[in-house]
Image (cartoon, rainbow, N blue to C red; front, side):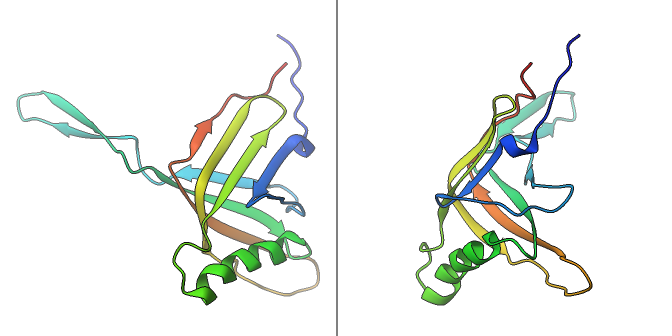
Length: 145
């Protein structure tokens, strides 16, 4: 058994071509698929069928600090769709690459689903941006070593 090392500086988050930075203390991004990949139907006689779900979507949350410049870049992307009235002007690519190993999350169809909740207080606070990803390529490969 060897020693594995993880370096958060080796996790790249690229949204619409720009690198994201200014993350919260304990989180960079979180991702979850919206649904299971298959739907199972159980027959009364014990037969089981599964149907592959073709439409695959997921939620990506980017965990920034209120002081991050990336908030302005994400706000600009959000405004492209909400202000323009053009339903596709705010659709953009997303790439998350973990250079600690070979993990990857990528799509060419993503948009901002929810702007962050905002609170001001005695210190820099969180800004959690929620993105919808369509048919993301996903590979969880762990840390090389």
